Length: 153
Image (cartoon, rainbow, N blue to C red; front, side, top):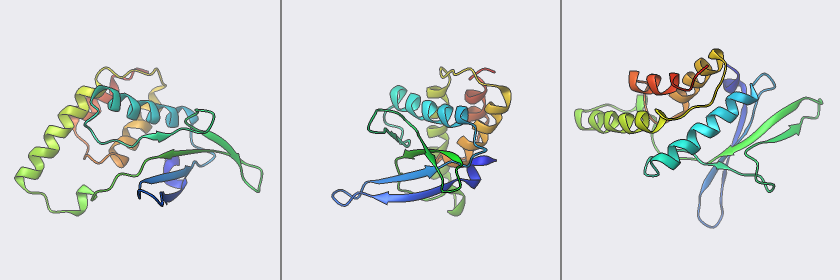
């Protein structure tokens, strides 16, 4: 999976400590996947603003991504999602109240994605499913997968 080979750097603002992750995608990364990820995050924010999702920082010319050329001449996509503070769920002990909160959040996430549609090839849906379950602060569930498959193909 291409996003596992991307380079990323965390940047913190000196005034407020807000953080951004600058990602430089591998040359094998499909630009449509990056676009789909950005659109899904923006869609979740529009539908349910109380769900904490990364926001994509726009370039000075209001784009979500920029193309950069390496010193070897290869072209990469650069983008910057906001950094979300928190703990990785699989690294903490789960208790019933916590699992109930996670379940409730997954339902909200599923509801916000059920009306999300961007036509993409079937392979992109599988890649996006893997990306979402890897990078969102929620574990994978059938509800999340059902919401993602509604994106079309």
